[in-house]
Image (tube, rainbow, N blue to C red):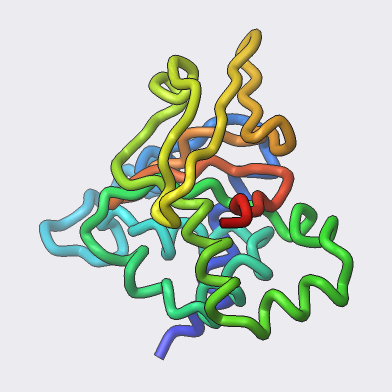
Length: 183
């Protein structure tokens, strides 16, 4: 069985490192040898889902650990579509270690925080730039401010790599973990 934690971490890192939007399917197509066209049903060439896409990046180990702990991996592998606001390992490192450990140990609170990073539907950056807010799967809204091509969420997190495409949605890499409002 594939290790989803390591798998979840690999593709997003590649996209995040470049600082440019990436289309994972296009990246796979451009990397494929011209002499070996994809065959129908070839699993290696099939578009990857959100989890598989993120898994191949390398900078989402903490997010992968959190999704596993919260039991959200299968949901995000589902049909969707979903838009994930994916905090990098560096974003999680901004949380004091003691607080992060407490969050990872509290499945109910962790699930709320992670669902606050997911929007139902496929929301590319072209749509995000026209929005002032979005309702998350957690149920609360995230405020969105787009100025000169820079998108900031809740006045705290910047989208650092938008529009990473997966078979069941879109990933926008962010540099700060968002916390849902206290209810």
